[in-house]
View 1 (cartoon, one colour):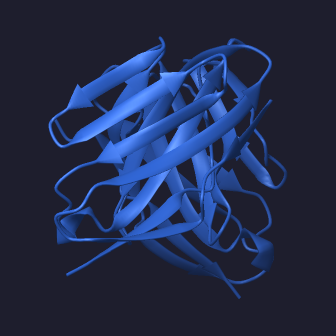
View 2: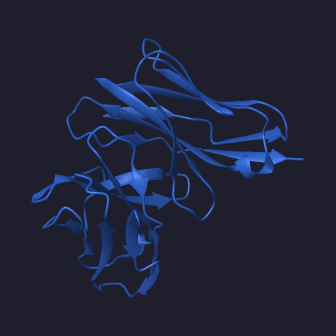
Length: 111
Length: 111
């Protein structure tokens, strides 16, 4: 099993560009979530999903969209990139009530 | 929501014991997790507590007191490779089963 796979690992964008961060898991986990991690701020929840077709907002959802058309995939879309979105992004998955399995992260810089 | 507090940084000596504390306030507690995160890597699951008491797993133990809103992670026989951030995460009864993370404690182990 590959676990949780995130692509790309690194990305540089210009302000105003849009892009999609990909996340896929092969563990048949119902729960998936996206976090951003900034120095001194810990992991902050952006959006999460409790199953295919169901998504909800976390603590810092503004500027991001998600969809969950399949159990395996949970892409995160930046609509119009801003320098404040420079961060490390982690995708995680879990069974209901279980511990989270994290991807290796995407390091995103916005100029 | 939750309010989670951890010390920002701790230092300890190789071979020693260190205790990392986590206090939290939540409207309805439903479990506490500890994760380890090495620099530049993804968080990995260490332990889970939902009932009061001590959970032991090799060199690592985690304790929970629900009445005091308090947990600690105890690391014994410290090794250099234990230098990492330790993240406390609390899940409440809100229904999403997605935990909220504290800002993490950076542990530096020196010879």
